[in-house]
Image (cartoon, rainbow, N blue to C red; front, side, top):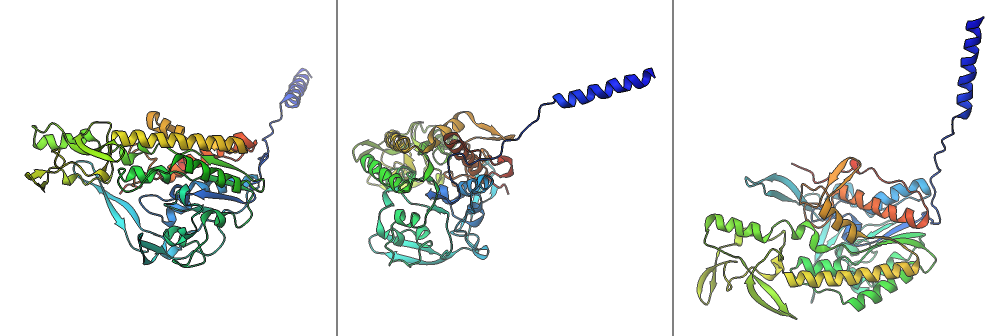
Length: 439
C-alpha cells in the first residue's frame, strides 16, 4: 500500500511539472512592414554575380540577390529569376580558373574559354569593340549589369556599348535606346535592393587613374536622387548599400612595393628603390621612388621589372630609374588613393542622406568590408579575411566576391532589411558556400 501511494505521489508530481512547463512558441516568419512579393535588384557586376574575372552561370547562381531572393521566400517573397547563361554556354564571358601554384607560392590562373556565350564583336566608332553575348529572354529580377556606373543609368544608347546590358534587351546593338532606369522599372515591383555607384570610383582606381575618371560628386548626388525617387515612386521599400573602399581590396594589396623591391634586391642588393610615375597635382605627373602608400595592381606583370627599356640615355632597367618608371596604369599612387577615398566618402554621404530621407534600409558595405580587412570574420564556423585566395572572401580577380563572400554580403543586406522593416528573413548558412576553388 505504501509503495502504491509513493507511485501516486511521483506521478502527480510529474503531471504538475508538465503542467508548469512553459510552452515554447517559434515566431512565425514575417515580412514586417515590407512586401517581398516581387523583389528586384539593381546594380553592377557585384549584383550580377560576377567572379574570377567573368560572368558565368555558376557565379550567377550564387549572386547575393539570388541568395536574398531565396531567403525571402519564407516570408512571402516570390520567385527570383536571374538572366542565367544556358547550360551549354555556362561559362558565359569566360573566367579565370586556379590551376596551380609556382615554386614561390604565387598562383597560376588559366582563362576558361570553352562553352562561352559570346555571339560576336561589334566595333563602335569612337568607343571600341563591344563583346556581344547570347540574348536572354524571359522574366528578370536580377538587373545587375557588369561595368555599369551610376553615370550610365539615364544614357539611352548604353545598350549599344555594354554587351552585358545588350543581352537583356530585345533589340540588337547598335539600335537600342532604352536607358537602364526605364528598363528596370518597366514592370511593377514591390521591393528593391540597390548597389549602384561602385564603378564610379572603381574604374578610375583599377586603371591606376590612367584610363577612367571619377564621377563628379555633384553629378553623383543628382543621379542618385533621381534613381531613388523613381525606385520609390510607387511607395516601394528597399535597401541600398554604400560604396566599399575600393583601395582596400586584394586587387591593390597583394603585390606590394616592398615585395617587388625585395625581389629585385635578391638579384641586385644595390637597388634602393623602385620608381613610379606619380600624381603631383591636377593632371601633372612626375617620377619618384615608390612607398608603401602606393598601391600596385594585381595584374602588374612583375616580369617587366629590370627589363631594359630604351631611353635618350640608353637602355635602362624598367621601374628602377626615374627615366623608366612603372607605367601609370599599374599603380594607384598615394595622392590618387587619397583622391579616390575622398570621392567615395562623398558618394556614401549622399547615399546615406537620400536613403534616410526616403526611409530605406542601408547596408554600410564600406564599414563592413573595411572591418573584415582589419579584423577578419568568423561566421557559421567559417573564418574569412581579405587576403587574396586564402581569405575566402574575394575571388581570383581580387575585386569580386567568392560564393562565400556573396553569402556573407547577402546576410548583411538581410540584417539591414530586418532591422528597418521588422521582418524576419532567415539568414543563409555561410558554410554552404565555398571560397576560391583550389586545384
